[in-house]
Length: 187
Ligand code: SF4
View 1 (cartoon, helix red, strand yellow):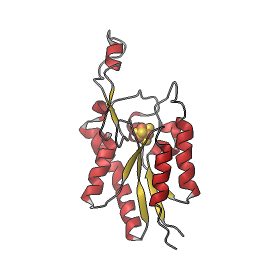
View 2: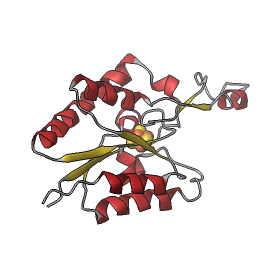
View 3: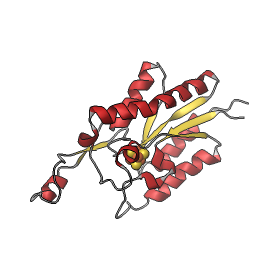
View 4: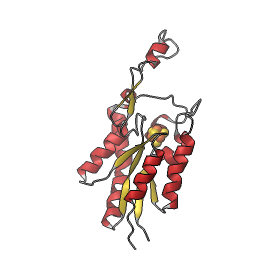
């Protein structure tokens, strides 16, 4: 039996954890399904990471930027949520499993790997006379989201070496190839 495991951001498997979207990017669902199909077809075990935003802000949350989640409480909650996952990873590694990697969601303020979003967002939406200007401060920056930063720290503390890669609509093909290349057969 092949012993491969991948960790994925919660919404790779459960899209209902995401911020309600009023116009999903074209091709995104197909891209997501393609990756999940690759994982399932190759009989890779899946560990679904927690969705910190759903846990802390619920289903009715607005879309946020990293600057808003970058608080001691948010970080600490992510860390606490992730601690048992680190122990699971350790247990699997100790028993000869191949951890393919951690698949995050690029662009996310929490789960971005190569890309997150920043912006000067704050204050009362209804009384903001320059709401459009505030929204326009959003930009994508080449850094991790808050939860993935915490996950990276926990992995480092344990001296575990795991690749982290981020999903975008455009890179699904590349991710599928990457996953297939990292599969180890132990029969
Ligand atoms: S916080 Fe992470 S898991 Fe939750 S919806 Fe955002 S990207 Fe997905």
